[in-house]
Amino acid sequence: MNSREIGICGIGAVTGYGWGRELLWEGLADGKHAASLLGGYGPNRDEAAWVARVPEGGDPADGPSRFARAMRAAAREAIEDAHERGWTPGRQVGLLHAVVLGEVDLWREFYLTRNGDLTPREYLALMPSTPMSTFMQDHDFHGPAMNVSAMCASGNAGLLTAKAWLDAGIVDDVVFVATDLSLVPENVLHFVRLGVAITDVDPLDACRPFQQGSRGFCMGEAAVSFVLSKRADRPYALTLGGAMSHDGHHVTSIEPGLEHVRGCFRDALANAGVPASAVRYLNAHGPGTKQCDRAEATMLEELFGSETGIYSMKPLVGHCQGAASAVEMATAALAYDRGYIPAPPTVAPGHPQLLNGRTPIGDGLTVKSSLGMGGHNSVVVLAPPS
Image 1 (cartoon, rainbow, N blue to C red):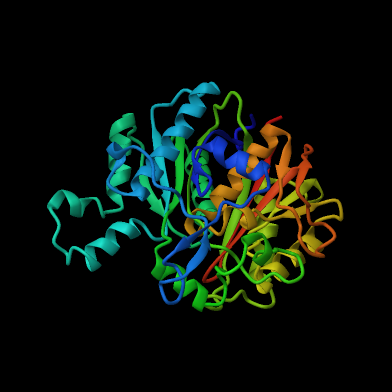
Image 2: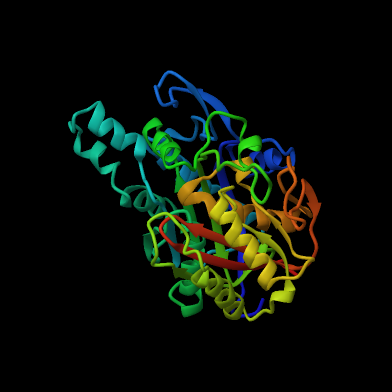
């Protein structure tokens, strides 16, 4: 590999499809969404709602919550996968954890059920450092370990931070994990009130990125992990570069002129050292909202050729908030390995460059964009391992 190319050499995943990378891929390959109808999520708490919630599971030794168990299970699976693909840890292995709302189930219990009455051990389980600390102890890793948060762009932000560490020689390898298991009824309700989350119809009907009639997104959960290294024998994909910026405009809305979104795309291509003509796929943020559809479709048409296909995974996995771009990037990396993109089936007239269902993948580059709430723009450039 080129010294600036960072290999994604291990992948782990816990999603609404279940506990494991292969369950994620099988669900996507079947074109079936990960959501189910769960009771207690409606405005009156007596209604069912469509949410792609991570099911109960995991190893109790990993912690008392779904959050801790999912975070550590995904990271462990990525490490085991990387070992099987020929990776050997270097002297300094760092850990980056992308998280927006951590341990929501435990904090909810802390305030609403336990009235703040916990043992010291139980209280420490609430701290964001605890699952990271126990993970580093288990694997005897001693590089830097820290959290990254950029709302729904946190996955891209974490990956680019990992690349910066590797480029600077701060670490030899990075385990990056993005975790968001925050679908308690209160959080879902407020996203519905914001007018972006849809819970009352089948997700594939409600969430139609770049298609007519899209109403927003179904909410999802995920923990997704990557092992990143310059010494990967058989990487799934290569991270060439990327960029981040901020609109500085509004707490939810994208700046209408798209100046900083456009600049982020251009800076990412420049950082990766590639022309726009080399990009074959745009793995979009694509939450199915009008402003995001408009922003990313504009970038597609302004910067890339007519042969560049666009797709969004949110109709299938849901919007996984702090883990959204990570689960979508895992899909892009696995697609190079498996030979096709498991794009969602289209259900309505849409953009002429929108992929429809399973699509054979070529050798071109993939751009992964993520436009986080509050103005967080991020773009990552991925290449096939060849």
